[in-house]
Length: 107
Ligand code: SF4
Ligand code: SF4
Image (cartoon, rainbow, N blue to C red; front, top):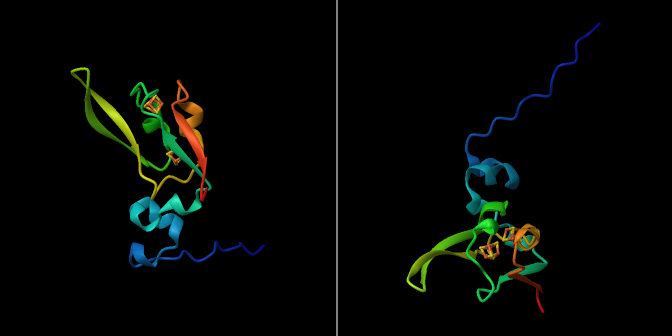
């Protein structure tokens, strides 16, 4: 019986030749997933406890931590980069104190 040959492997000479999703594994600047978003998360810093859970869970690494001093102590303030936030909802689902509010995009 004739053996089926696997499909010919595509070899890219540079990451710039690759389609958008695989490219994002190498350089996220090619894949600004913020264009996918229809709901925007907005952090209510009045409720935020600086626990960093949203930062840890974000699948796009769209949340960065900026040091801020509150009552004499340095805390990691989460800041959302809307170029990469795709509005997946993980951060506002995981936030233990419901400090991430949502807004419909374009409203
Ligand atoms: S998970 Fe909620 S409380 Fe924790 S850092 Fe993020 S926004 Fe703040
Ligand atoms: S909505 Fe999703 S992609 Fe956007 S900041 Fe939250 S976890 Fe990250």
